[in-house]
Length: 127
Image (cartoon, rainbow, N blue to C red; front, side, top):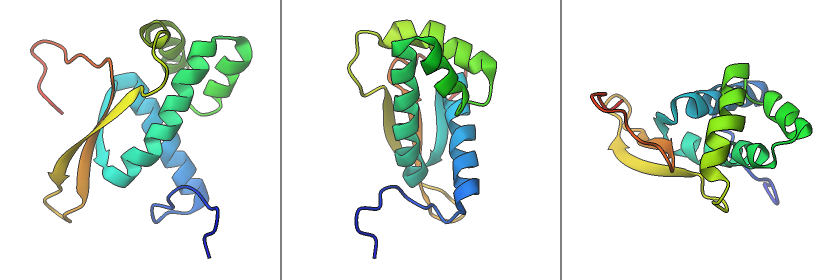
């Protein structure tokens, strides 16, 4: 029975799931927008919001906690400088999930996961 067990397994082992979430959080914070399946987006939202909350704290311990999850020091630097300033006045809800329909190959429900302050660059096509 699954009483009081939270989170989705996503059909992966624990180590694979943790690695996948770390990679996806790094990509989300680097590009500010990614395309994935809906269940992955819902799991990723929890971790990404936590990373932005750490950045808002801004101390050394929070930076080291973020480095334990995010796999690129440049992304952590971006998080603690650029993104931190954008979200200081916001109390949660740093990401949005936009459902885009089903994938052609396997009919998996797809979604765009993006930061709420995402601005598409002029002349850039949608991913």
